[in-house]
Image 1: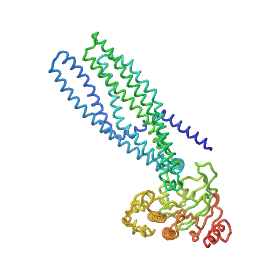
Image 2: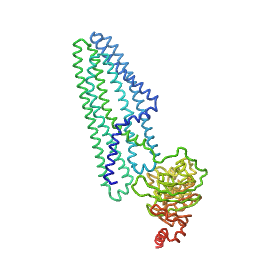
Image 3: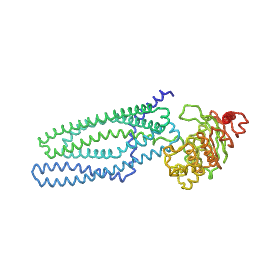
Image 4: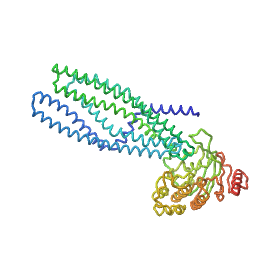
Length: 602
């Protein structure tokens, strides 16, 4: 696919998303999260009704004050109604505060549950998903979009519900006060409602565009900041600033257009609402002069009309907020509705206990679905017995790391079978499978936190003594004991405070603590200096003892003692045997060995 086609496809995808937002009504997806708390929701609705009901009582009392007190000039009646109004106002204030509290608590609870649900679901998605989605964008959805939704189930929801009850209640009280004047509202009302309806779809599409722009900025910033040394090394600060500024400007323009549309809508609604009140005032004055209503009833009616108008104005403003929330919700629900590509067996076969420690590939073909390329592996077959050490050798792109991914079932094979402990990995529980495998990566992943935290990652319930034993076996204590805080020393984000060799030994300690029967080492010493490599190699020898081990190595000197060496080229297994057998055979491995060992001697 050409770059132009990819851009076109991306635009089409975003266009489809906007269409789906309108059709699927994404805000409904929040209901299951809200309905999880029925008691809090019931209390919220109770206080909502009490607060709104008392607010609707006050205008009726004011109408009586005018007709019974001012018109008859009876001060006692005015004082009596005044106390009644104060009592109602106190009840209204208490109910309003309680309503705000409970709905805000629901909002925070829903916010927490939704964020956890999205994060939990992201961890269930397989590697193929992360091949095509940027971590920065996903982080933006997890944080930015979830925070945006707080407005829907927090303050905005509170105001929207109250406004809706006020509008309905005010219309009922207006009808009871004067059916004739209420008829004028029925005529004028659509003039205010129609603009809101017309702007709904436009605001929704603008909100999705704004959220997409923010996610793009977040993804770019995450990528840049995590690669800051590379950026500085290539003196690319200015270029990165320009790219970030350009994308920020796009986000600003998208948000500016959305705010302009919302502002225009609010302006229109406020003007039309004011004009409608003036028109009703004129009709009301005629009704008083004709003796159809009293002055107090007109005042009461006008207060209800202004309450309904104010509530409707609030609703139009909140409606604009909800478009932003709808866009954010759609993006999150899109994640929650994404299904893992790996099909997990409904009734997985239990793996043998204790583990056999065996592994086999049978006529395996594999192609990455996310790439328009030829197969990565072609008809690969081999078997590894318990306790055997096997080395994988081949040029970059030969398929070595892919074999590691298939053993752990990060992907499914295109053809053939991968067997661990004699069972097809597609027939067993992936968690049970991965519990039997310890993986030491070439680019060691170190988490922010302490040294002890990183070692304990291999066994979360490990005791301090177990951690120290694993650390000692991996030669981690050699440098930890020199640190002021020992095992409680902070390693920094991605282990920036540790050297390459220290990171590798930390990863080995983690693998030792896991104590898995199958060990996979992906070029664990490739980027180390001679001293660090020697220390790491000693730690690896302890780690490999008694385990089935698969080693990827470009440095052939580190695998000379392997039980067997598998030679891969262009995704095919072209040769296998011991180091001496392969050198004597004179094939591809012999060429690599001659080149490396001659260079070493020179």
